[in-house]
Amino acid sequence: MIDLINSSPAFTAFFCFFICAFTYEIGLWLNRKTGLIILNPQLIAIGLTILILILLNINYTVFDGGANLMNVFLTPITVVLAVPIYKQIHLLKANALPIIIGAGVGSITSMVTVYLLCKAFHINEMVYTSLLAKSVTTPIGIEVSKQLGGIPSITIIAIIITGIFGGMAAPWLCRFFKIKNAIARGVAIGTCSHAMGTASAIEMGEAEGAMSGLAIGIAGLITIILALLIPW
Picture 1 (cartoon, rainbow, N blue to C red):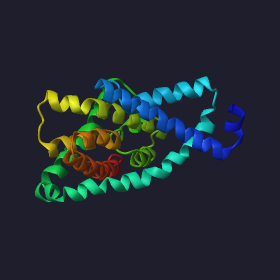
Picture 2: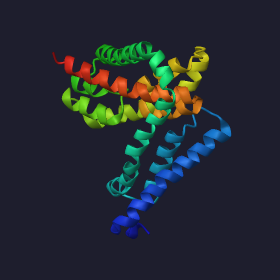
Picture 3: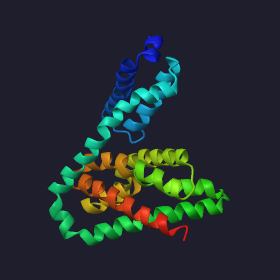
Picture 4: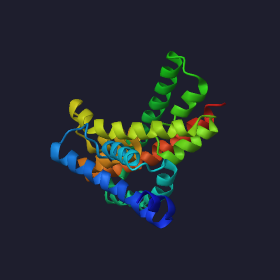
């Protein structure tokens, strides 16, 4: 079977796609069954995928090439985020200024916090410039990292970790701080933990999901503008 995976591109693609989908479904089932925040579907899927690759001795390069089939779905999924935004357009029109200000303040806070912490712990410039874009979606984060002279691979890891733990913590933090306004919850989640957090926001409600999806775009735009100003 391993020889077939390594030698057949078509089989590799579908097998790796199956691994991604199957491990995520297991994570989703465990999360719904237990209700525990720590059992995040993405986190479980990553752990199980790594375990399968080790047990079957599948080279990561082979897996990565096959798993690219999953990327085909990224564009339509991103476009689908516009549907709940359109359905909640009345909320957007009525609260445009608070939404923009909320996403802007969140983006600035994220970048300033990273900068101050890295300075406090004497982390070198290349690393902290790689971490500045941790709260935006991956394509934007990679370009911002390159522009600032960072390391894109570190940026990707930081974005993934931020998204996973943001999605895990968001429902609990909203309950702890008694944040009941759907717009506030959605904007906060989308600004801080991009698409992975938006998945949690959608589960909280349609309005939260719509505002979170909108906040991803606003936060990404503001981060790009800030990245242009940082060198200056």
